[in-house]
Length: 603
Image 1 (tube, helix red, strand yellow):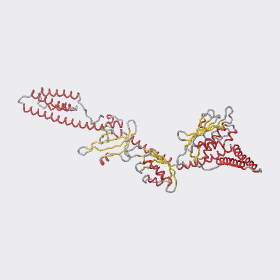
Image 2 (tube, one colour):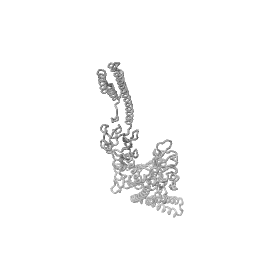
Image 3 (cartoon, one colour):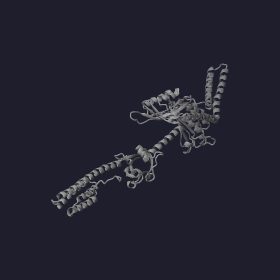
Image 4 (cartoon, helix red, strand yellow):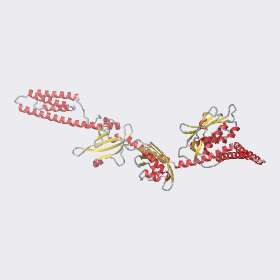
C-alpha cells in the first residue's frame, strides 16, 4: 500500500505499549504512595491514548481495564474512611476520564479502520487517484499514481501535483480553483510527464471535495492513462487515410456484403467507382442500376452464388455511368467468419477500365508483332514454299499433257483421261491449300477463335515444312494421340506457334553431323485434361541457364535472330490459357506446349 498522510498502522506496535506500561506504573506509584490530594489517576488517559495509537482494539480495551484496576487499587491502599467522600469524588473523576478517553480512542480506531478500508479500495483501482489541498500540494498518492507517473508516494507527498507531472491542460480549459468552485468538477484530456521523461496523455477528472458543512477542503483527481489508446487512434486514423489514398490510387474499393440480404457497405472509393454519392444507401439494387444490360445475368449469377454461400466470388463485368461512360470492374470476395447468425462477404471492387484498355492495346500490338513474325517466317520459308507450290503445278501441267495425248488418239482413252483430270484436281487443291495457309499466316486480321484440332494442326504444319525437312535431311517422327484433342483458340496464331517451334528445331540441327537429325512431334492428353504438344530435336540444345531466358524478348542464340519468336509464342500460348516451357533432351532440346481442352459451350 502506498503511504500517505491518511495511512494508519494496521497492527499493534510494541514500543508504544511498553512506554504506556512504564507510564502506568509511574502513575500508580505516584497515586498510591505520595500524599498528593489530586486526581493523579486522570493521567491514565495518556496510557490509553498511547495504547490506542498502536491501532489495536484489544490492547486499548485491556489498557483501559488495567488503568481502572490500578486506580481502584491505589484508592484502596491510600485512602481511609475519613477521606472517603473526597477520594471517591477524585476517583470517580479519574474513572470518568478513563471511560471518555477509552470511548474516544475506540471511536477513533473505528474511524481509522473505515478510512483504511477506503484507502485500500482506492489502491485497488488501476486509475491514478491523487488528493491535493486547496493550494495544489499532494496529500494522497495511491498505487495507481505510483505506477502511472513513476513517483513513490513519500517523494510525491507535499509536492505540487501539476509541477511534479509537468501538467499541460488544453488551452483555455485550466481547472482553476475558481472554476472548480463554480462548476464543482472538470473533465478532459491532459498531457503529463512520467518521472523518466515520457510524455503521457491522461483522461482526467478533477472534483472539489467538501466537508459535511459544504466547505471545500481538498481537490481529488482521477487519471486514466490513454496514451496507447490515443496513439492507436492516431495510427488507425493514419492507416485509414493511407488505405483511402491507396484505394484511390489503385482504384480499388472495399465492399461488405451480407449473404442473407441485399444490404452492403462500401468504402469511399467504391462509391466513386459506382458513381454514387456517399449519402446514398449501399445495396445490391444500386449495383444492378449501374450494371451494363448485357452483363446483368452475370452479376445476378454472382448474387446467387453469394446467397448459396460459395466460399469465393470472382467476376468481371461492365458498368454504365449516369453520363454514359462504360467502366470495366472486377469484384472478388471471400466468405468471412460468421458473426452471430449472419454470413458476410468481404471483398474488393476494382476499376480495371484502364487495364482492359491497356490489354486491348497490348493485344493489338502483339497481333501486329505476330503478323510481322509470321511474315518473317514465311519469308524464311520462301524457297520451300515455292517448291511446295511448284510441285503440284508441275504435276498439273504433266497431267494436262497426258489428257491431251489420251484424247488425241484415234481411239480416245476416256478412262485414262478422267484419271489424269482427277489427279489434276487433287494437285490443284493441294496447291490451293498451301497458298491458303501461307495467305492466312501473312494476313493482318483480328484473332478469330474457333475449334482447333491439335492433331490436324500438327499435320498441316508438318506438311508445310515437309520440303524444308527433306532438304535439310531431317527425319520426322510423329506420335499423335488417338483423339483429335480439340482446343478453343485462333487457328492462325496456334499454327504460328507450332511452325515457329518446328522451324527452330530444324534450324537447330543444321550443323549436326555426328548423329541423325531427328524431329519428333507428339501429342497427348494430360491428367489435367489439357492437350500437350511436344517438339523434340537432336540439335545442340541450350545451356541450363537459358531455359527461361530463351522466352524473353530480344534474347536469341542465333547469329541473325532478333529474339522475338519464342517470346511471341509464349504470349500467344498464355493468351489461350496455356503454358509453354523448354527442357533439355540431351542431345537437343524439347519444347512443351499445353492448352486447355475446349469446354462445352465454347465456339
